[in-house]
Image (tube, rainbow, N blue to C red; front, side, top):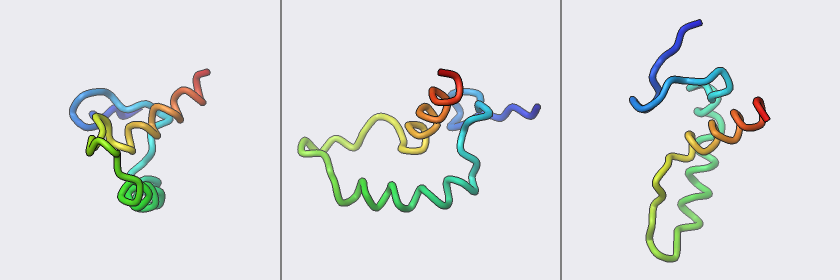
Amino acid sequence: MLVELVMGERKAYPSDLTDEQWAVVGPFLDAWKAKHPSASGHTGRYSLREILNSIFHQNRTG
């Protein structure tokens, strides 16, 4: 199994989004985020892709 670094911080999990999958869903999430800015102006600590990766990992592993 090929293990590559994602964002230079952690190793990829099998449940992570591929670049092709992110190319499909990423624009929708970025558009949603642009229309719903934080009231405090905070942009968030984590990328939306990493948040989705964590949801898929939790779903896969329980």
